Image (cartoon, rainbow, N blue to C red; front, top):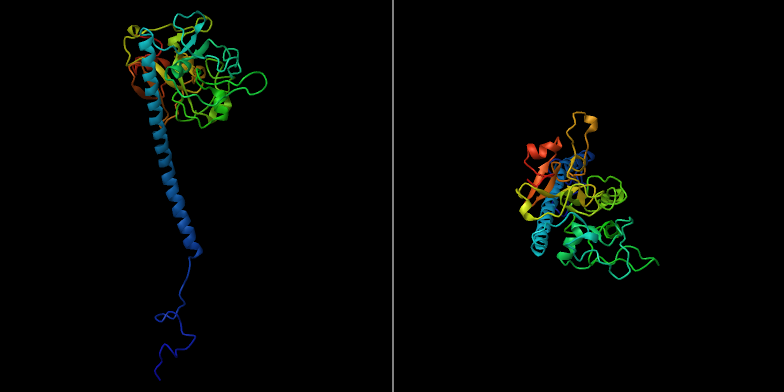
Amino acid sequence: MVQSHLNAPEDRSPNTKTGAPRRHGMTVVEIVAVVGIIILLMGILLPALGIASGNAKWAKSQSNMRQIFQLMQEYTTDNREIICPAAFDYRDSGYAGKVRSSQPAGAVPPLGTELGQRMNYGTWTDILWTYGDFSVPKLGGASDDSGPAWNYRYDSPDRPYYETNESYDSVFRAALKPTTTPGGDEATPFGTGARRSEVAHNGYFAANLLFDARTDPNENLYGDWRNNSEVKRPSNTVYLVDSTHGETIEPTALGFGSPDDPDPGMQLEGQVDFRYPGQTTLMLYLDGHVGTEGRWEQFSDLREIRNILVDSLR
């Protein structure tokens, strides 16, 4: 009798060649093998993605520094070749600028220190914010009954603004978060250093206090009003550097770290933030170029080995 597909036995094996039932799905061993491969690939790719992201933010921070230099040039052109001061106190200044004006009238700057609430006192960011005529951010600072809320129209946003607007991207801040914060009471020069809560914010660029224009001799130990003719090597002279502490940095081992002391216990970390891939930092020089520098062993290495001027104009 010849069987056809119409009268074939019902228990005929699905696999006509081997008689074994056809398998469906994956075994536990196969699943474990696939998961292991995925984990291995993630272990390879994630570090590469992290480096790529770090490089992109490194490039963004460089771009920010170049924009800062363009604003500095505008200020210099309008003020008889004066270099934008790192910090200022306009009480006795011959170069008063329209910065840190009360907006609206009667408002008190939100920085919780005596210096931070002084209208005539500020940094390079306040000057260049005004020169750049940046759009006015939302009102910030106190909103209680003590007075009107502060408006950053003539004052570059500081910590109080970032506490409630952490995604705010400013040309005066780095694209990467700081590696650490000193846990001070306020960013320099208004206080002893960035607060620990600021580790979630964009990192600081700090201006060299070799260009300090404050009038109080107890505050200003290194700087003066400087003009372009005093700078003999602009391509070697540092104006800005990434910082963990705030908007200004001392042109000393205290600021830049690693003093010339043979005792390792006397070495200081300083305030420079090496936040980019390869533990590098950015420096803006007075000719407008941005350099990337790795860690140095001694403060003197900057001048003697790397030919970088931090504490001198010549």
